[in-house]
Image (cartoon, rainbow over all chains, first blue to last red; front, top):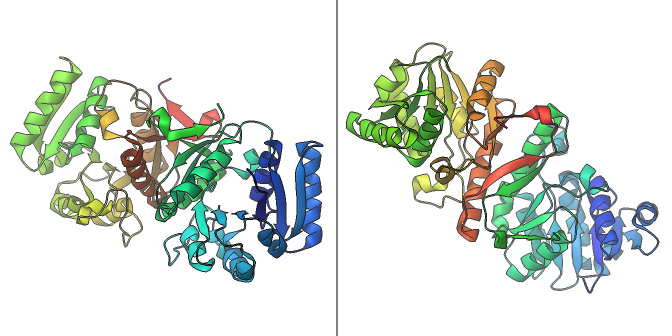
Length: 230
Length: 230
C-alpha cells in the first residue's frame, strides 16, 4: 500500500497478528494502543519477529488514527464504542476503516461461543454509525484465528470482505491476499457482516469442543471469486 | 442404518438431494409430501438415478412420519410450523428428527441472503418446541448446496451437527459421513444451530454475487473432529 496501516487497539492477539503478517509483506504499520508505551512495546516485539527491514512503530490510538487514512480496528467488542467516540476527531476525511470486531457475549461476561444482538445489526454497522461521515467501514478478518495470524504458517482461512464501497472492498481484498494462506472474497454490502460475525462464535465453540484453531474455507465458487497470493 | 429414513417435505431440492445420496449409500428412504402422488413421483425419479437396488418409496408426510423413528425435515421455513403441528400425532416416541430448515427472509418475500429472527433463537429450536416430548431434534445439512447434493460429484462441504442428545448427534454424523465429500463435525448443543443457520444466508449471498454453489469447510481442527468416508 502507498500509505501506512494503523492498527487501532492493536496490542491484542488479532492486532499483533495482522501487524506481523502485513509487516512481513512490506507494509508500514503503526500500532495504536491506550498508552504510547504499550504500543511501542508491541511494535518492538513485532519488529523482532518480522525481520530487521520491518517498519512497525507504536503510539497512542488517536495519534495512530490521525497519521494515516488506512485503519484497522482490532479491539474487543466491549471497547469498540468507547474507542470510536474517542477517535472521532482524529479521522482523516475519506479514511478506510477495517473492522474485525465481533459482538461475542464474552463482552458482558458471557461465552465467546455466543453473540450479543447489536441494534444496528452487527458490530461493523455499529462502527459505521460512529465514525465521521465519509469514513468507509470495511468488515473483514473476523474469522481468522489470532493464533494462526501470530504464527509462521500460512493462515488456512477465507476472509469475507463486506462494505458499501466497492473500491474499499477491493483494497481490503488486496491487503488480505498479502497474507500467505488467506483468500479474500467480496462478501457484498456491509450489512452482510452480521452473518460473518456469527461465524466467529461458531468457530470459537468448535475450537473449545475440539481443541483447535478453526478457520473457514468457502467451497464451490468460481476461481474469480477468490483473491490470494497463490 | 437399521431403520428407514423418512424425509418430510422431501420433494424439494434439499430433500431429493439427501434422498438420492442416502439411497446410493444403501439406506431405505421414504419421501414424504403433502400428496401421496407427488411423493411417489419424486421417489420414482430418485430410484431411476440411484440405481435398481435403491429402496425409495413415497407417501404422505404423516404416513412417512409414522413409519419410522429416523426423520429429516427439508421444508422451506414458511412451511415448518404448519407441517410440524400437523405431524405431531404421528411421531413415534423417541424419534430422531434431523432439521435442515433455515429462516431465510425469502419465507416472507424477502431475500434468501438475509435471515429472519426466530423467537426461539433458530429454526431448529422452533422445531424442538413443536415436536412431542422425547423427540430428539438434530440440526444439520443447512449449509449443503442442494445443487451439489442432487449431483454426482462429492459434496464439498462440512456438516455442523448440533443437538442436545450426544447419541443422536453421533448417529447423524454417521449419516452425513455416508455422503461422499461431506465431513461431519459435532457442533455441540442445539442452540448453536442459530449460528449455522446464519451461514446459509451468507452462502446464498455469495452464490448470487459470484455465481457458484458455495459450501463451507472448517479448517484448523484436529483430525478427530471430522467424520467422513475418506
